[in-house]
Length: 406
Ligand SMILES: Nc1nc2c(c(=O)[nH]1)N[C@H]1C(S)=C(S)[C@@H](COP(=O)(O)O)O[C@H]1N2
Ligand SMILES: [Mo]
Image (tube, rainbow, N blue to C red; front, side):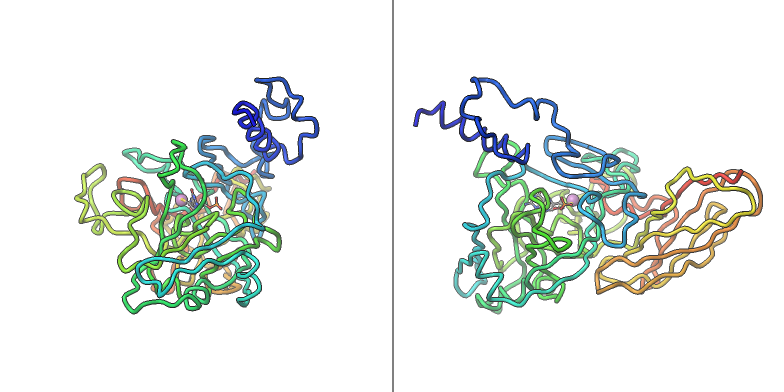
């Protein structure tokens, strides 16, 4: 095959992936022509996302939800945010997919096919809250670099897969194991195959939890490509960056995993609070583990109007990293007094919890409803922006919606 033909074949199949259909007479496409269907790519069509989702970046693709899009108890694919550090892999053949387990603390190196993983180990389904560590970053001042997520970088889908622990045990773990690190097949933005866009992980204790999955299904179907098809880690309650997509290798490490985005400012915060804009020494930065308590009002959409004398039913979800949400409150007077919401138990550990309340207003006018969750350690969401940090992580300030009573 001539190199030109080879290049063309490669791009044809990637065109086909984008369009979602084979390009039947593709080999006749004149040189330099690209299919009309993708000359103006519509991201919402490409990823099957709701049209109200907001594109923050297309190189790499980063798309967020809005609070009202997250109203479902179990987040559907159409409303799940997308966060990529590199390029979405193309031409994945699940039949040929393998997962390698290696690392200093693996007793042996072992390679599993996807079929082996699905048949050899027991399958479990959990609903798991996954929130990007940078969700809410856009509020920080001075501005923190990175995608300017507002509220929508969180989802709580239902994931089916096998327990990471079962696979690690099957391989054999040495006593000195400390951490696991994942590797995925997505390409670095520079397209340099020796670089990884991201390779993070978590301590053995998290790897051993019942709910830490190697998942191959999301909401009962194959995981959509952009969310990690055909195999991804799902570690609920921790920054979503540890839930590696397109995972083909997991290393059992005898030290804290030192892959891409495990060091420096990436997914690390000052171990102790600092002044906004202050520089922090590397040794004073700590890796983010469990995410802080947080909540979202998902109904009504901010800007709702109601008639005087009517009460308003509000609802939403609250979550608290590794903990449960113990109390949910709302305020209509900018946080000066609070009333209780009803809050449900989580479907399983690490799933978000649904709340609702019937809100009445004293008279006509403009109001804001603020929502505040408190975790089982009695730690509440801050009303205003929490501590500044260089990359703008962990903004769990109270969610506010605007309401007008006419
Ligand atoms: N292989 C791989 N895994 C990854 C990432 C990535 O870029 N590549 N991004 C991480 C980050 S930072 C987040 S927030 C979540 C986003 O998951 P989602 O796109 O399914 O919502 O995936 C994580 N896993
Ligand atoms: Mo993230």
